[in-house]
Length: 73
Image (cartoon, rainbow, N blue to C red):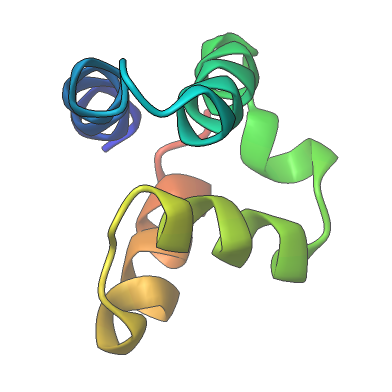
């Protein structure tokens, strides 16, 4: 799942190249996603905000969050 989120992030960075504020936000998200077990380091509200910034639909936030948690070994 994290790899899928990184792919979404890369696409959004390309999309936002001419919008510096949105691009910078995605650059920060890129750094977070690169950290091992990043989802454990953030509170649930921050993790949900990142998922929303990655265009994950509101209805899928809990499912994606739980998938990320379940993938941690």
